[in-house]
Length: 206
Image (cartoon, rainbow, N blue to C red; front, side, top):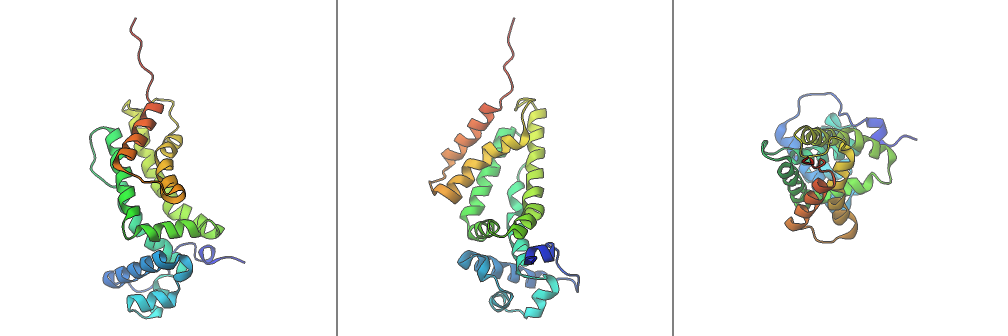
């Protein structure tokens, strides 16, 4: 039997144009319910009641709660990869990690973590999350890593994905698994360690 995420493909149904105000109320209500009770709390009835809209409005825009939850999290994660351009790539990655931490620590963070947890036991939801959220965001940061290689801040032999795992892995481990504190100093340590590990070889003077 296919799950909600598989049936929806994560694509909202076509219909009349969405009201921006109603859409934000719905996504905000979804985020609150995700934070309070995880994906099981996100029923179309509960979201409609919390947002103050008709349930038919939800079904006009989203085929089911999985598609709605994915849209909610995608909208709240979008700002992570954005930020000031220019300067050293080391500093740009440090800003990205700091922005990621601020989002996860903010009021929307629990909704994001709840969906990440839910996808571990729902393979179809996991695939939809990967396709709609994880892969596009990974592509953005992968491009930034490749630019750092081209700029000479990272070794030409650097595997961009391995470098990104070295950066983001410790942050998510502390946030999701160990619960150890994540400070600005810890982020500095992560970034410095990753750039040292993937540094370009030193030129020898003859």
